Length: 81
Image 1 (spheres, rainbow, N blue to C red):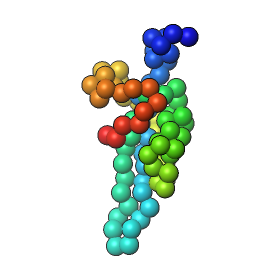
Image 2: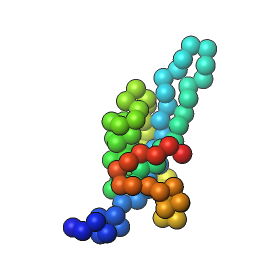
Image 3: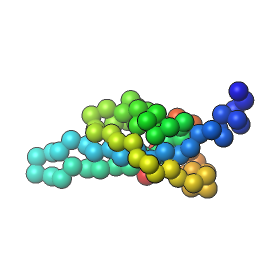
Image 4: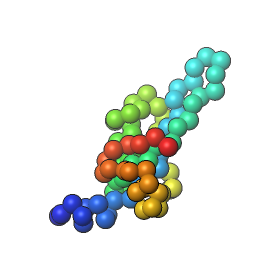
């Protein structure tokens, strides 16, 4: 499979991450976007690469191609929103 075809099958999946509660503070929630084949794959990449101690949840949200291009997403590289 060539790179262009592979990139065409990837979508910009949004993942949420909630950091553990720190005494006296509300838990911090972050959103990440990853150009992957599925929301589950995006969640796993965020868990492995940037937030192993966080509660990770895949969402149904997918950014448009224009939004992904504007952010400059690369395949399988999590980017904070």
